[in-house]
Amino acid sequence: MGDGIVNKDSDVTSKPHEAMAKYLAPDLDAVGELIRTRMASEHAPRIPEVTAHLVGAGGKRLRPMLTLAAARLCGYDGPYHVHLAATVEFIHTATLLHDDVVDESSQRRGRPTANLLWDNKSSVLVGDYLFARSFQLMTETGSIKVLDILSNASATIAEGEVLQLTAAQDLATSEGVYLQVVRGKTAALFAAATEVGGVIAGADEKMVNALREYGDALGIAFQIADDLLDYWGGEATGKNIGDDFRECKLTLPLIKAVASADGDERAFWERVIEKGKQGDGDLEHALELLELHNALEDTRTEAVNWADKAKKALEILPDNPLRYMLRDIADYVVARLR
Image 1 (spheres, rainbow, N blue to C red):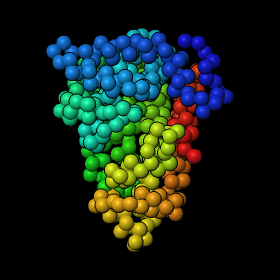
Image 2: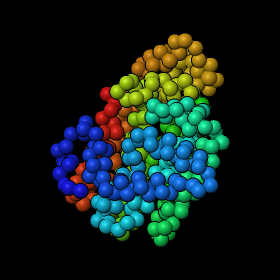
Image 3: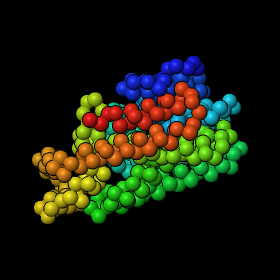
Image 4: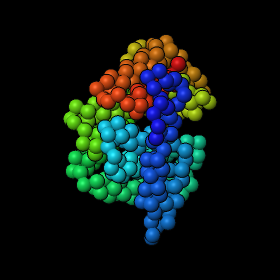
């Protein structure tokens, strides 16, 4: 692993997660090998079949990379950052399997979902297996602090998903509740991924806190950007415009538009989101209302502000190529937004 792949003047449009993957290639290879070993099952071959389908779907492996980067940035040279990175990936994969069942999804990363190729039962049970595997891996580090962080994150993720069930179609959902959902279902794992990297490296409390704050803010920026791209998407982003709208999901752009709605507009939102009665032209009208109330641009501003918070948290960390890669990843998360 050499220095100089990303520096203070690097171009964030050059996909910094790819630069980080190259910088951490030996560690990532070790993570991949550990994942392949631990997702094996002597008695239930469907487990590696289902897991391999999702793990092999070409994801960026951003969360495990954050763990590796945090540990290396704090000077760690032991073996257990690999265990923790694999743990984070297993938790993430388990939540994806469960999410696709809950959302009745048929496609993820451009491929059929596991629940479509197999069935809902297989997806739920394999997800449970991966959660169990993740706890086995994290205990092997021998760190109660690590176990505390990742087990709390797992509980927070589940809590966030349940909260989203009740909030997603309720027009009374506030921006505060939305943020609570995002902190649960997305940012909790980002924050845990970076925090445990510092903990396993024996970093001091200030550095560990900074890493946690970076992961939390990055995860929030990531999810807000993802929700915004549902209305600003296209071929370049790999998202179909309006998927969240068609699924009646009340995300931040809609929450902002509803807050500014007059009587007729609120009646429209009640029909298409709360009641789920959508017809021809409704998406187009929704987009008009989002533009009218500047909801999309205001959402973009919030995503950028959270990315800036993530970068601010990095300032006390060592001057190291990985620090600048982490900074550039925060920029890249929101660089996709016009």
